[in-house]
Length: 239
Image (cartoon, rainbow, N blue to C red; front, side, top):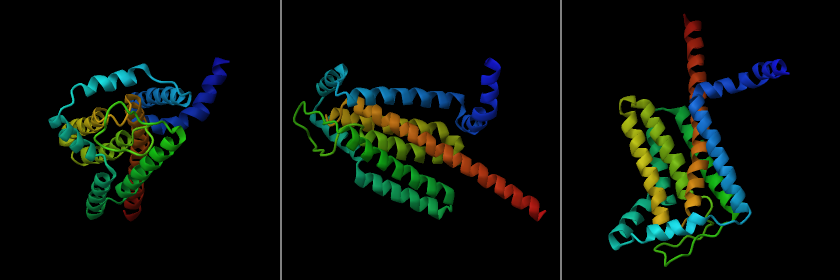
C-alpha cells in the first residue's frame, strides 16, 4: 500500500508540485497553506453570521487612543490605499515598466492588480458583511466590510512593486521589504483606527492578498525562467 502511494506521488503529484516548490520554496508553500486554512476558517464563521469576540473589543480598545493629531495621520495613511491613489501609483508603475521595456513585468503587474480588484469585489458581494458602527465615523464607506479592500489591495499592489524593486535592486532588498511591510501594515491599522473595518476583515484581506500575490510572483518567476530558456536556445542556434 505504501509503495503504491509513493509511486503515485512520484509519478503524478510530485512532477507537478516540483516547479512550484522550487519557485517559492518549502517554507513559502507551508505559509500559503497555513494562510489558506485561516482564510477558510474566517470565511466559515462569516457565512454562519457568527461574531468574533475580539472584533468589537479590539476596535473599542484602539479607539481610546483617538485624538485630532492621530485622526489626521490615519486619514492620510488610509488615503494611500484609496482607489484614486492606487490608480495613480499603478499608472506611474506601468509607465516606468514600459519605459524600461519590462514587458513581462507589465503583463503580470496588470494581472496582479486586476485579480486583486476582482477578488475584493467578488468576496465583498459574496459575504455581504456589514461594516462596524461603534462610533461616529470620520469617513463614509458604502461597500461591504469583508474582506478589507485596503488590506487586500495594499498587499497585492505594494507587495508586488516591492518584489520587483527588490529583484532589480537586490542590494537594497531588505530595506525595500521592510518599508513595504510597514506601509501595508499601517494601512490596515488605519482602517481599524477609523472604525470602518473589523479586525477579521483586515486579517482576511491580508491573507487573500498574500495568496494572490504569491501566485502572481510564481507566474512571473516561471515566465522569466521560460524567457531565459528561450533566449538560451536562440543563442545556441546563432552559434
